[in-house]
Image: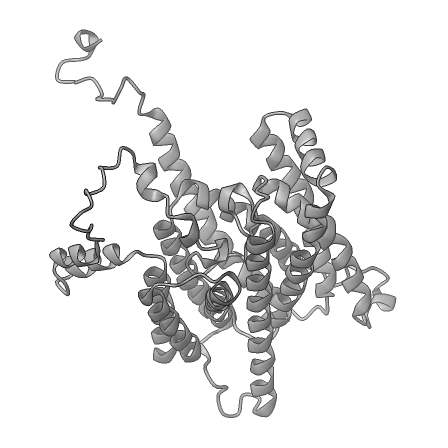
Length: 410
C-alpha cells in the first residue's frame, strides 16, 4: 500500500492492476534478441570468410551436412520448450509429420533449395570479402519481391520498388573491381564466381519461401515443426551432396571432417542457430528494430573485414553500404512512417501524411475507432507478404513462410 512506501515515493501506476514486470521482461528480451541477431549475422559471415582464408581444404558440403544435422535436435528442443511438455511435443510432431504425409512430402522441394543455397554460401565466401558478400546477399529481397508479384499475384508499394532500385545500386557500388597487379583476370573471374554463387543462393532462398507460401498456405504448424520437417529432407539431401563432390584430401586425411578448424565449427553452429534467432527476433521485435539490427550487422561486418582480412574500405564501398542500409529501412516502412521521418528532419510536412490516408465515400460512415493495437497491426490477408519479403537480411539465409506460426529461418 502507498501508506507503507518511504517518504517521497509513489506507488507504480499500472493499468487494470497489471504488474509492469512482464512488459519489462519483454523489453529486455527484445533488446537481447536484437543484440544476438546482430552478432549472429556478422559473426556467421566473418567466420565463413575466416574458414576460407585459412585454406585448410575442408569439404564445405560436409559442413552443410553437419549444419542440417544440428538443426534437427535444436528444433525439437525448442518445440519441447514451447509446449512445456515432452509428450505434447512428440504428439505434435507425430500429428504434423506422420499424420500429414502429403504436406510433409511437399517440403522436399524447399528442402532441396535450402541445401543448394547453403552450399552456394560457402562457395561465395571463398571468393568475396565478408562485407561485400553481406551487401550482395541482400538481393534476396529483390528476388523474393519479383517472385511474389509473378507467382502469388501480389502487388508491391511504389516506395518499396524505389527501395529495391536503391538496393541494386548499392549492391553494384560495393563490387569493387580488383586492384591492378592484384591477380588480374584470376581475381576478376573469382569475383564473378562469388557474385554468381551469391545470386544463386538468393534465388534458391526466394523460390523456397514463395513456394511454401503458395503451396502450404493452409498448413501453418509451429516454426519448430516446420524446421523439423525440413531437416527430414535436408539431412539426406546434404548427405548425397557430400558424395557428389570429389574430395582429394579424404584418402590422405582419412576423415570427412579433415581441415575442420575452430572457424569451420563456429560457422556451422552460428548457421544452425541463425534460423532460430530470426524466429525469436520476429516474436519480440518489430520490423523496424530488425532492420536496425540488420544495418548494424552490415556495419559490424565491414569493420570486421577491415580488421581481420585487411579489407580496404573505400568511399565507393561506403556509398554502396549506405544505399543498401537506406533501402532496408525504406522497404520495411509504411508511407506514413517515411513521411513522419522526413518531417522530423524538415524535408516534409507532417500534414502530408493525411494525403495517404484512405478517404471514405460521402455516403459511407467513417470507420469506427480501433479498440486495440492488434487491429492496427493486422494487414488484410491479400496484402500480407511472405516471410522473406521482410526487409533485406536474414536469414540468415532465407526463411520460409512464417505467417500464422509456420516457416523456417534459413
